[in-house]
Length: 327
Picture 1 (tube, rainbow, N blue to C red):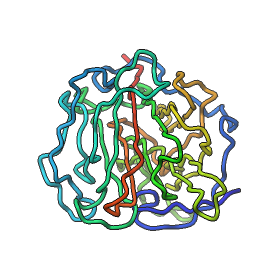
Picture 2 (tube, helix red, strand yellow):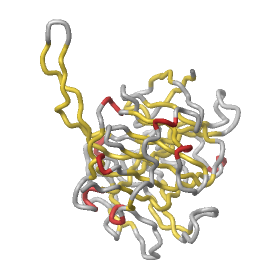
Picture 3 (cartoon, one colour):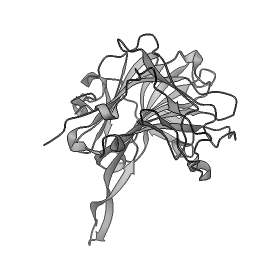
């Protein structure tokens, strides 16, 4: 067993609490749960991007939204010229969203990738000196004119460049998130029988499974060296779960998949190779609410929002959605 304290406005809702959770050995957890390797099936072109167009551009409409903090959406929202990427109306988009030359070691023939970084992650120009986040999202249901049922076995894969640890924002906290939006059926109370409470799944709820990357600074007494760790959201009780420790920087391949039994499957592998069953981390029925439809995916960029220190520079490439349509 290991203990992790995950603080910050989004890492653990709005509070800081102590979780005791099991740390699974990377790649060694029960791979029988690896029901669907992300990247299986057909690539959904309308919901994917490769940033190869030299004219790729995101149009910011500052000041950005911060509805989660002060109820202000500040329309119109920012969006990309290819009309795939959008500012979050809840939190606003990263301050810098720019097509850049693909960092060394990226996908073969890739000439462009996307840089994400932020300085003001909370209410615009009002430092809060605590962890805040910006969101950049792809509304898959809008891009393809409809959601993807989990019976079509959807998945999403992205390559993420992790810079050398010396270049990260020096704060032991969540720095980056790769997340999805799904809709699942939740338990609702029906009526009380003599000895038990009968339940049925009738209420549909939206939730946001994902994978976070938390930086652990060597300047904190509990860490001997700089490192990072995956945090998986969420298990059946809605808890964040500590995943594999990251000691290798550079390019990583991350993926999530969704199966018709309602489970969400999480994968990660250093490098740019396609994911395999060996890259499976863990699987859950998040919040005990089986996923029935996949709606969108998005990325979080986080910092301490002190108005001085920029977030870590995050670069993503080739985010791609896959499915296996059923007749």
